Image (cartoon, rainbow, N blue to C red; front, side, top):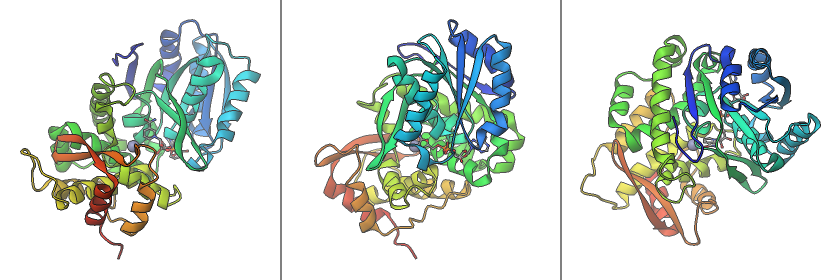
Length: 363
Ligand code: NAD
Ligand code: ZN
């Protein structure tokens, strides 16, 4: 259970999409109609299962499909979702279903947050990244032409339904990408999860065959995120811990024109931050010397390359445009040891030094 202003339940397990209708009924009892928002990859695979289950639960259902990909996480796609909700005459008691990865969840969530000043939605994440990260916590957004996630809202879902069986249709690269956020959660909050992953890296085979293990790992990640979000829903303090690896990670994503996966960029960002902060002289009483090396090794064991494909000066340039920057300072998350990190206010020169010292020049 996640207790924010309105508590919601996160269901994690197998064959959950088949029973999704009952969950939606329960979470949004007054709903008469549901609109499933999904993308062009996920819709053909799973929308019919959710549609049938919602219909069985007595809901009228319509499906809106948008073209898959981060490049479609735009105002235009978001606008088309809103127009669809209006054309279907959804009212304030109805419900939006976000069926897909983080792109779908972010856009359907933002549409739900703004349609008629906010209606209920239920997250049905289908990527590992969305299950462990983006579907919980209530952040939703679309990209603007000058930056990612620049228009958005905090809008908590009525429930989350993570059917781990969906992981089986991802590519190994897409699955590995989601492991970046798993490693992040372990670094900032859970040394024993980190050690478990060191012993048993989450390979594609493991996560798609041992679904109970997949469910347990996802559940632990959701707990870690919940524990941060419940004390700081709107990211004024502790929630910033979840941005570990993201200042540099976002810069890498921007340099790649958003062609590199989010988790992959976060992996490079985590290693660069851990290594660079140490090299820049940052210290703490509980600091452990091998922290950066262990993060690096664990990312690579999960198929995530930690070599930065761009030179440091390009990253510095991109990082200066980070929307989380406040004037000449930025809050960076610095790991002390595995399982503990802190938020440090740094000036841009310090960020520059960390990037220059932490990023290995491309070969
Ligand atoms: P995504 O939604 O684009 O999914 C990746 C690809 O996998 C897409 O092509 C999609 O169509 C496909 N796909 C999804 N599920 C599938 C399945 N089960 N089988 C086959 N194909 C499937 O991207 P993502 O990696 O899930 O999420 C990245 C997005 O999430 C970014 O836009 C990022 O900003 C956002 N994000 C948001 C938060 C948050 O808190 N709101 C947190 C982290 C990331
Ligand atoms: Zn992230």
